[in-house]
Length: 499
Image (tube, rainbow, N blue to C red):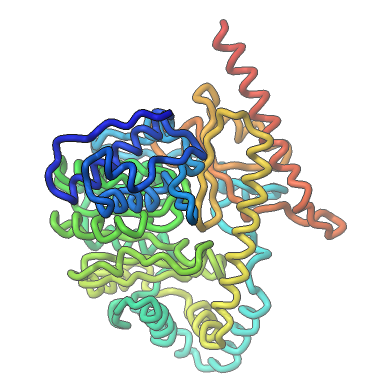
């Protein structure tokens, strides 16, 4: 029998339901209720806590939205499978201190190894190239080249091709988001979108909130622009820690905030829908522009695309960055910014930096989108990625030590895996190289060593074709080698500790 204590100290209904939700969350963390346990019914909890059933129901809905419990028809609410939250919290609670960044050779090593002959390039940041509609894109490029015989047709200055910007604006409108064509700027991929956005709202020496762990491209961009990072924790299940975000804003003079709202790189986390308006309003209250990196937003496994933070922007202070590189054409390097009130500044900056994005690539993607096959491609891509997520997670759960903590993304193509702290995943990366297997060590995603025992795995990669053209996707030998190398490193770290 599970004891239940009354919660005291809050008077308002709003605070009461939050108190109840917080208290149950703590009980789950402390394993009072374990996975599969049924928590008290709404009626029982209402009686025990002396509150209305509606208040309890709101608390349970909050817990369900946060991933702690699940509702089962005619059965009640049950503790759902979840992370070892205490381990995750201990791992990802950086202090809100600014720091200069110094990215290192490890990033180049992983990128190089993942693109030069690796048979299982799990360390790559890009999806399996076999998943892209290359023939359809080739036909689109051929049409563009046939129709654009005059040299002037290939001179497209900022903000980019009007046809492509119109197609992007229409996709926003289908989500119910009003974005003017005039605020859309085409960029050379997502990194230029990020760089231009940061440069428009900061100056060297300014402080920028970033996530921890963070995509190494962001760390490199901040380093190049001479900006200081203020890391804020990312929970691999619920995304950025809003309380830590507020603390960072209150403790520092912040010039900008960079967040990945959907399927975060490297953890795969997403900000829960009910928290998204709060994130935007908190930043708006501090008058801090938000750079929303949403390059994985189309890769959702649910019924509908998650609404970007941009949808809650009422002041034009959210710069929404997207890209076709992760779901359509990585080699084309075409991205964009829905820049809000910063569109003119960014357009001017692009005019004196990269000047323009390759015209044939812009025109080819615009042509492809106009043909109407993009959404069908995305549906197939999402189904494939979801299936590969499930296959690889199941395989890894059988292979890796029970103490391993693994993320459970609802989209994208990354898994974030946390090993025992005695293992440095840079050593794992080196141990795997002779076997043609790569991973992305945790050290790439922070500058302070906090994530050295973690690594990112690209689940879209299932093996490249061998010399006979036979794909080894079903054997998943690369995962077996990863598990074997982890086991060897675990033995080594144990022996070393004994001495």
